[in-house]
Length: 99
Image (cartoon, rainbow, N blue to C red; front, side):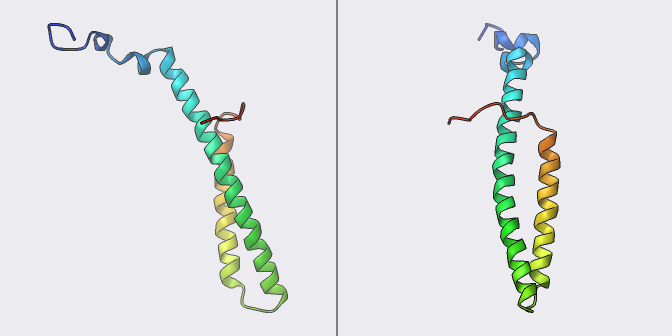
C-alpha cells in the first residue's frame, strides 16, 4: 500500500490478473474447463436417456402404461439437445484435465 491508502496496482483501473493478457488466459481456461464439465454432464445424461429409451420400449412391448416413461424420455432428449447446442459454442477439448 502507498501512503495515499490505495494499492499501487489498482491505479491502472483494474487488477493485473483481470485487466491484462493473463486475465484473458484465465477466462479461456475457465471456458475450456466449463466445456469439459459439460461433456461429462452430456455423457451422464446420454446414458440415462438410453436407459429411459430402453425402459419405454420395454413398457410399450409388454403393453404396460408407458406415458410417464415416454414423457421422461422426451424431457431427457430435449435437455440433451440443449446441452449439445450449448457445448458447440464452447472451445473444443484440447487435452486431459489433471486436478
